[in-house]
Length: 98
View (tube, one colour):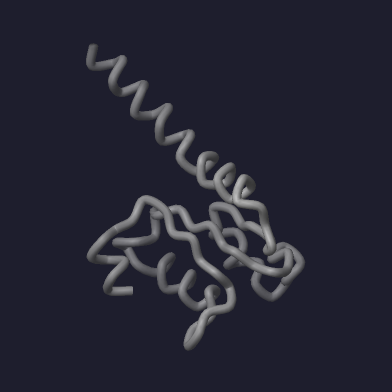
């Protein structure tokens, strides 16, 4: 978590299955942090997280998810979809300044 706070990435790709701490636990910490909660999170999982009723609150906090295995094109499309609204906002600001 300290590395995330220090680097403040534009996007977090997070796997559900990680050594020592589950991706869901990491997501809870990210969304509970004032410094990190606005960073989009895309979860990689081998099952459809929308089917995990017990995790419904955490599922709602995901920006998106990818079911593994996935093609690299699918991953790239998800990442592009996360950044598309940000690029539109930046373009609108640039036009407004002109």
